[in-house]
Image (cartoon, rainbow, N blue to C red; front, top):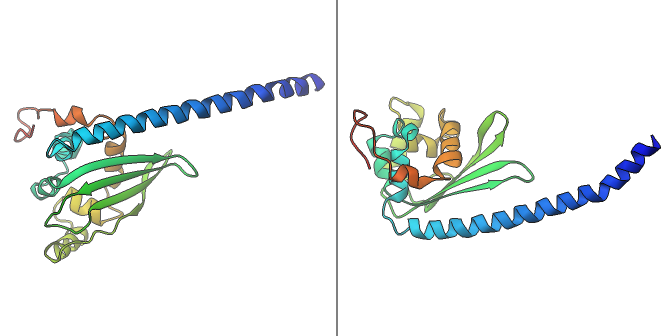
Length: 194
């Protein structure tokens, strides 16, 4: 037992060194990534309709998006995803909008807790719908006869597809939006959107 104690004492400074080195490496990578994302954001903001096109061209999102949603998406000027790992693992999706006829919000934020079972919505910005769309948003939320991705996703914290949408945005679309912005739709799957 004494030899094991001695070995454990000898390992303690090595473990501390490893923790410190990992923390420094992580901080350096976070800062480098933040710089690159800032540069990417400034380039994307110079491309009209970039995020709308990337979202609409994503094959899984395409199946969920209506014509009205597509119009609403045309007002998106920026999209950001922030991952927070402490004290709980969560993901914050922020969509920034220019003035639009649907709602007053300049930014809509949806937060998701991430665990072994996937994404679970935990908080969202209340949408400040203009009067013309407030009733429609309520109606779509409570009498869901048609699938309207954004009307439902923005309005309903418990929207059935919400977790999958968060997963697509956080794990795919956000990481490489250019792949979907430049994607041409496969012939025979509707109109070409690229």
